[in-house]
Amino acid sequence: ANNATPSSTFAVRADTFYITNPAGPGVAPSMPFVVVTTPTTINGQTVPVGVYMNAAFIQNGTITSAQIGIASIDDANIANLNVAKLLAGSLAVGQYIQSSNYVAGSAGWRINADGSAELSNVTVRGAVYASSGTFAGVLQAATGSFAGALQAATGSFSGAITASSFATGSYTGYAWPAGTGTGAYLDGNGLLLGNPSTGQYFQLTQAGQLYAPGMSISGGVLTISQANVIGSAQIQAGAIQSANIGALQVQTANIADLNVNGQKIGGVVSGSVSVSPSASVQINTIAGRYPIAITNPATITDSATGVTITPLQIYVGYFIISLSGAPNAPTTTFNYAYL
Image (cartoon, rainbow, N blue to C red):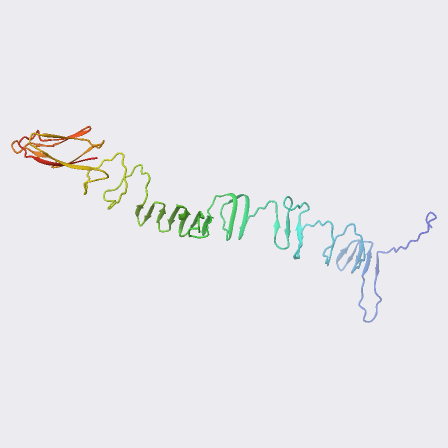
């Protein structure tokens, strides 16, 4: 008895205590349970104090602290696992690993067995390959390639961008969009902007041909089908071989040589007058028109004195054809015109 309380004690006092199977023919020796109370050396190895079991089957046990060299566990439910290194085979479909603070769309991270993942911030030191993607914020890249579509709200590239084509709006290839669709398209064939069906378009081909409303450049030749305003133009001699002008309004023009086949240029009035020697004829401006210096002949020579005169004299509101400086000239018929 211990303090009037029934009790019992079983003790084995020995350096080593073990349990072994009965020895006999055909029975292999076995020591599944050994208790070592003092450090000892077995087969050249120092064995510290402790309980050694060759194999143990525990139905239900609580272990406060355990040091396990190698453990094979078929199934385990672990509330909290702290490991220096974790090696895992694979995750079953529907399974995942995630951080303890994971909240979908706001905090932490999660990697699903199907390959999808949600991360807060990622630093990738190597290459990133994607068939498609969307960036809601700023995209920055020194260089890179995208095999599929790249979409970004904003972004900047400090290096080169290599792409087989570039499309915006209604464009799907190097062809004008159907209907009134618009946008831009660029590839190895050239550049397309707008749509001819709207009257607002621009095309630059790989061969250097340019097409726009009212004008084109093809084979080094500039063709202008419509020009509303030309502020200043310098045209090389012989550059215009033929021109058909429906209506022309010119405020100021310096023309070195004008050859008019007909008698009327947009409202030019022409006439003729016969002038006797030493006489003069005055022709007044008609309805605000102004005379132009076209006469035939333009000069007259006095047969006696040999003096050559210019018979046409232009004044404000009228002009005079005079032979007063050539009294010996014959009576001459002059052709004139005024605007």
